[in-house]
Length: 148
Length: 148
DNA sequence: GGATATACATAGCATTCCTATGTATATTTG
DNA sequence: CAAATATACATAGGAATGCTATGTATATCC
Image 1: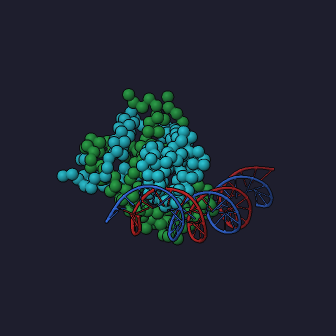
Image 2: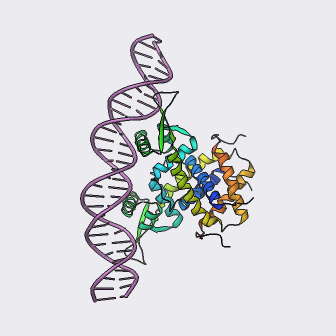
Image 3: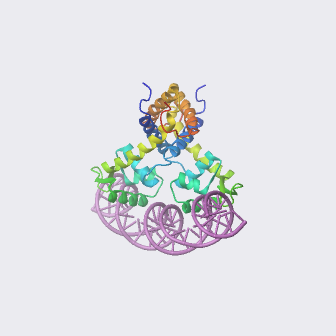
């Protein structure tokens, strides 16, 4: 029976992935949560405007301005002029910021691996396939409802 | 070829699931991030001590004390005496807290569903299977290395 | 070209978070 | 079993972070 209720599947996926994230990042040594969310998003997007980051993280624009300033001073993030709009600035990761992110990911990966090796080959294959599906999902635009 | 490098698979899974979470919860109307993390963890664990929650969320014990107090005043969380240790208290979700969590999940589920219906039946089945694998994974203890 | 809108910064105040420490209970030890 | 030590949480006070309101510069619309 294939996903008769996609909202239900969506909820299941979100719950599972939230729990997985909490488990994997439990004993990880990183910057504060808010900073890591921004770094992760910048890695995903390449570059982004301040107001775009604020909306995505559900904080106010001044709060994101402030966070970006701190990340900039600390060297994790860089600010460039937006060629298309001189009011805006484009934020992107520096090498140091990417290293910070990769360190956190590696720690989380190790924590996960210590459990993954207890799974069957079939289960591992399923996870690998799901990673590919998720990447596909991330490139899709939200469409209102069933195309039918 | 099956996961020759489990740490690598672990990292891939963490990155994918972080991005998925950010996408799904982008336009969700909820309590602040820190509060939602605690509610999610309580739902997962049933009940937990303050210091346990603090460690899991990588914040100080007084910070978690404070957050729990606020969640308690707000009615999302309840505090019970620990029968095994009268210094400790056991925190658990109230019905209102669970409702708060479920509302957030539903919103995220809907956001996901608007993309899920663009996937093939095969991909949906993969996600469904991955949810089951993740739940299995969450019950495992971390074991040092390959059992061999 | 003037009016309105947008992107970000700054200011000032409110909330949250941390370190240090206090209190009560548990556990260990001589 | 009493004293010493450890643990679980609360409180206090200062540091950091977040928010609303508003300012400045640029963009867009009529």
